[in-house]
Length: 119
Image (cartoon, rainbow, N blue to C red; front, side, top):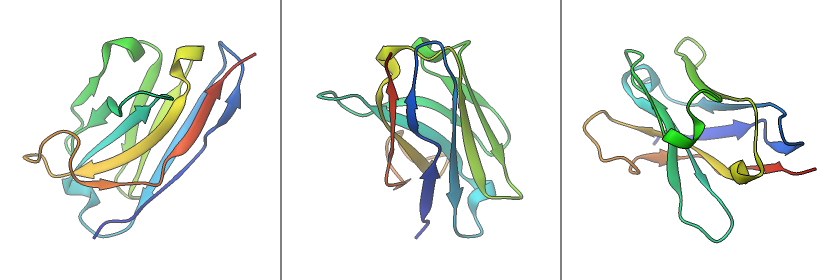
């Protein structure tokens, strides 16, 4: 079972930046799709971005041009650089790992980290 530990959330003003990190245990990280999801208050969890083992990236439309997902396979870590943050980005952010053939939203999850964008 893969274990995921997230860090980097917090309170930031609109227009600011945060960088989320997710460190994974286990030796198969390099083979997995790594993703970030978020769950705003009162809403369902949804995909923000994911990156495959060979570097193919997908972003949800609302974060394109503002967020950047990356991974360091040597460190078993996936990152989410969030720039130009908006109040609508406020949510609990979750790290996810899954196999390429598994459905989006399946796999292993981190504990979540709160991101609050407010003045």
